Length: 395
Image (cartoon, rainbow, N blue to C red; front, top):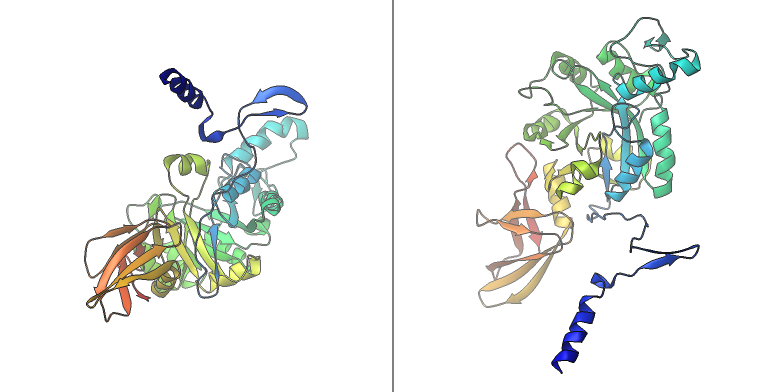
């Protein structure tokens, strides 16, 4: 009997793990390892809020058509796999080193067709900022074509990229012609973008700086009403003080990757989701998404931290929670709070011990029997530099 049992255990041990199966190609007798080459997407579950769908967006990306390392098609495919619904293509307006290299290599084949350009006019003089005279809308068109395959909405844009310490970088979103935006004066570039209906986002406000001091150029842009939003998060950089600046200037807030390599390299292989801008809109169209951004219905989300308007944060959190009465006694009510979203929350009640509420898990609270609300401070939500919303959950 022991021998028979041992044989059975040995046979079971040789079975493929998780019942994986091998297969053969009908046209090829070789046996392949169990790899299904069907595209897979990570779904990030978020609640509907106040009748709006919460769309997941990245409003700051780069490809080989500026200084990125991948094609527009790859960037779109990657965004879809990461769970996004929307992506903006924002190549550098003035800085496109890979493009310079491409054109330099092809000069001997095209008879020197491409020249340096100043203010969109061909000139023989070298230019430090403008770069090569090519179609600056091409990257968007490639991404838009790829986005159609996945139902991804692609927002046209460009990044006005000047000295980080003295001027700063600004994304023009919803542009109609990137070729007509450049001017040697960065403020005029912003005016040119606004003239075609673009919304302008102040990017990584602390980049290459020792503090968040506003530069003279930024003051001018703010004063003229040329800036509509600002990045609270850029990659792994988080600027809590910028939440206050956004509120004071009536800016929309955003969290974006500013990705140049791949998000697998920068985030997923390290165990993190990419940062994203959460946009509360009626539908996934350019018109509806633009309306939501102009109405400031955005939240910045990255590394399980959510930032934005206080009331919007409260509504967003409450919409993702389910409160159930487990049992009642003569003195107490025992509640289960269930997180119906993909975000982990850090909660405290009246300064009590912090509870970590994981996605699709529940935590337990005990309240006096006459209670009608559960008040929770959400410590990984910020509506100011050091302030967290207190949300009243009804039950």
